[in-house]
Length: 163
Ligand SMILES: Cc1cc2nc3c(=O)[nH]c(=O)nc-3n(C[C@H](O)[C@H](O)[C@H](O)COP(=O)(O)O)c2cc1C
Image (cartoon, rainbow, N blue to C red; front, side):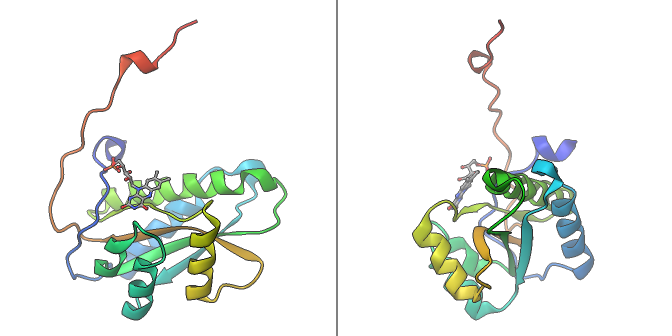
């Protein structure tokens, strides 16, 4: 479990590509996530095309770092699922699994907020020409970190309430 206490958001990357084997491990980690009714609402788009990465970097006001990444994974979800209200929560858990696995593999990444902001979702869907049954959830640029950052200790006893 060392990754939980080591992972940090990484927004600057080396140019080195992410190896295919490592990419598969990231996707495997995502798909092992728990989901409501085990509905697995996710679909994963792997983007290495520089032009598309550049477009994604402009899809939200806070996604600039995507243009410097060797690749990004865009997590999408199906519009209609058995436990419909929970599909975004499911995708958020899958996002964290990817970020933790990336850390364990010596990679780094960051969750870029897309859903639930409708305008950002539509932009990403347009850029990727997503089928109409899918919605964009998040962009995760991933690569080898340019610099090593130390995680801050956020443990705050005042957030814990004993009854
Ligand atoms: C729901 C969510 C949305 C986020 N959106 C962005 C974003 O749009 N751009 C960005 O650079 N970082 C984004 N982040 C990363 C946070 O800024 C980061 O997790 C936070 O500052 C804590 O830093 P750490 O991840 O290094 O612990 C997002 C994180 C979450 C959980």
